[in-house]
Amino acid sequence: IAPAGDAPLMRRAMQIGARDYFSPPLQREELLESLKRIRRDAGLAEPVGPRGALIAVINAKGGSGASTIAANLAHLQAVRSGGEVALIDLDLQFGALPLAFDLPPHRSLIELLQSAPPVGAAALKEHGARHPSGVTVFSAMSDQMPVPWELPARSLRQFLDTARTAYPTVVVDLPRQIDPLTTTVLERADYVLIAMQQGLAHIRDAKRLLHVLDSSLAVPSTSVTVVINRFTEHNHLSRQDIVEAVSPPRSFVLPNDYKSVSEAQNIGVPLHELDKNAPITRALMELLEQLLYPETVHPPKKRGLRAIFGNP
Image 1: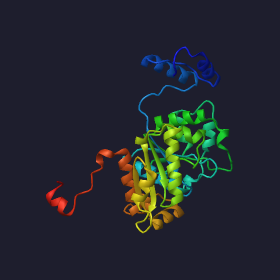
Image 2: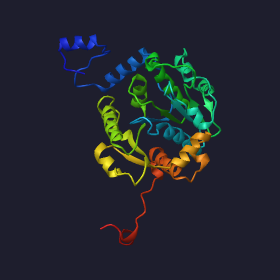
Image 3: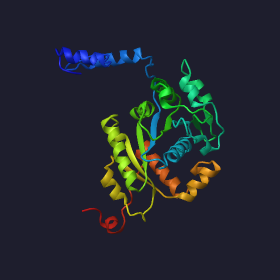
Image 4: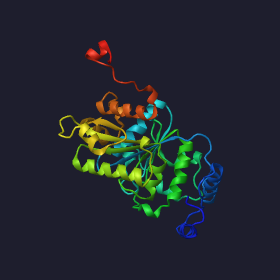
């Protein structure tokens, strides 16, 4: 979109791959028709019917707990809704999400992304490892060691569109990197969770990742939440310190419940099945409700004099 009559600029746009050229004032219908045409030329089907919510979880720094958060959010959503949830492990080299549910490796996610023609919504469910709770795990866990640039982003776009047609909720566990595949997910996500811990290095990387999401990927700030994992009040960096340093659109705290998380991981069961009353389980359920069920979230009750006299 640029001024009319600028031939050098128009030629430059064509050289770098622009598919259309508009000059202000824009006509809404003309712009929409151009976008639809580009979509058809790319071989992407028009969206049909409602799409499932897409939650993307990514670490600000390695080992912050994104995989644990993604797996248990998917399980809690299946328990709460009584429906099906797709859990996609996009760590194509070292992903191991089936182990969190004690599930054997199933058909590899690589096969799905490389299949031609793309698998339909009905057949898609047969390719994942299904847990009794209703969570279906799609993982690349196998002897293969693919690299992200071997898989076209177009295939992942088609897979995500199909998954969101087949499942009311889709949770994606992303590796800690920015590449065509992770970008494809982040740009389409309804909710982006950035997992971090209480540390200066985590603060630095969370701030950098937020900047990338905002400036390079144009991810709406309204969809982003920074999750401070393994939080403890005894750390010299308080939640307020982190919020002031990182300036996230929203923040959420998950308590340091090492015993529960470690035991759940070692025996391959979700936290809700291990102990639904554990602090970490309750906190994750609260996070899920803030994301998908905000109408059920009530403000904390007033205590002390405020409860008696109310706010001035």
